[in-house]
Length: 85
Image (cartoon, rainbow, N blue to C red; front, side, top):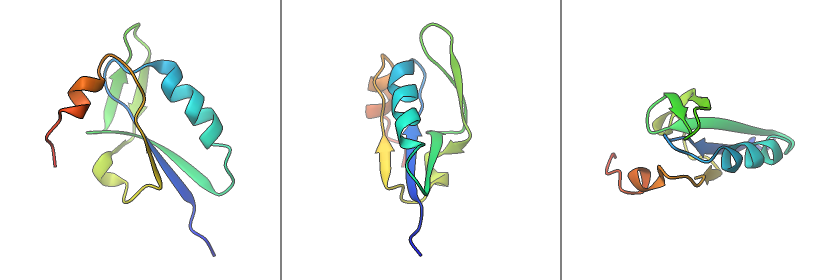
C-alpha cells in the first residue's frame, strides 16, 4: 500500500491569495493526497486586502511532505530570510 502524497502550502502574512487557492484546488484533487495549510507557526495569516487563512499546522508538524509549495506575495522576503530551525 502506498502512502498518501502530501503537500504543505506555506502561509505567511501578505501572501498572494491566488497563489494559494489555485494550487490548492488542483493538488487537492490528486487521488490519495492530503494538502496541509502550514505556517512557521500555526495560526491565522492575512493577505494584503484582509483575506485570512488558517494554518492548522506548523512546518514542524508535517514530517517530510512530498511537496512544499511556497506561494508568492509581498511577505515572502520575511519567510526567505527566517533563520528558524
